[in-house]
Image (cartoon, rainbow, N blue to C red; front, side):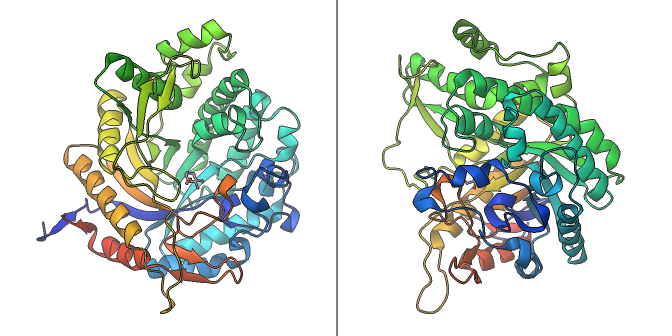
Length: 454
Ligand code: IFM
């Protein structure tokens, strides 16, 4: 080991991530259908200052330049998502060849530069036509997703080895259907639990089809979850139980079916009482548990949880940690939580191989008079998280790669363009891109396959 540097395994993959709606723009170009985010953003009050992803970073038209920037950064891999409504404008049935063509060109250009594509099939932008039929609350959507996954992997599977079915199904289910702050903007607990089930089912239904469509020996199929460890707010047993309840609601509800083919018993008991149990068919849990090669972990913060009778049906609430540092999202900076989480996944859930498919932070980035973007807070944030990832690897966690969120500043959902997560600064007036200091720093990490100690 070189002095002062924590070296990662030779085969470790360094990348950056984005998602279609957040960067592509071109919301109605070349036959693309409307998605639930196109619709949701048009409702006044849903998004900060009425922003939309209509243009976003205009990556749809600028992807070749963006790939040059990725090359400049030294990225080994790039995680992006496919806009379902570009492929099937009505969600199923009629195929849009121009949509496929865009992703063919993107994949070819990445491979030409030696950057491995890691593709997410669903990062929240359901075709509106399927929402009109009930969206993810309708079991048919799981089968439409299966057809969509089959078509995309049939078209791109000869060149792309790494696939994720979903990004953060918990966010789709809860933010979209329970809290109503993401598309489609619904607030219905029972529906949210049904949606979660159909998302998981759609994942399980697609895994073997994707696997059959990919020819390479090194193919890997997985799913990405948003995960954070739950810490009790005090030593009291009631707080510890509340922390566990919250973890099982937000994370166990997805991890357990995927890893062991069952929903967490403690939450099932509560949902039974309220009549919130999802309706399912006898084979569903077996399908959901179809073996996969990896789980993608999107990590941003930990949760500090206290018992709060009556606050919600699970009787928990969050506590703001005193003396902590926060990002612009109001999320606590807590790198050790990444290590704790990775160990938990590996030891308790016996997860397969893991990737960090997202980690990063929004800070107030401004162009300095010297034309540069100095973002020491982001460098510090990433460095400390990389160190914790290294620590987990040293202790046997099979962590195979790390994707920084995000490649470039982009549309941050209900926050519009007000939060900047990028390694690359996006000027939303001119759409000019500028590498931040963190991008140059990340280039060095990748070059030396390691991060400084301390
Ligand atoms: O921007 C999102 C991304 O789409 C999903 N994971 C969290 C990121 C930051 O909020």
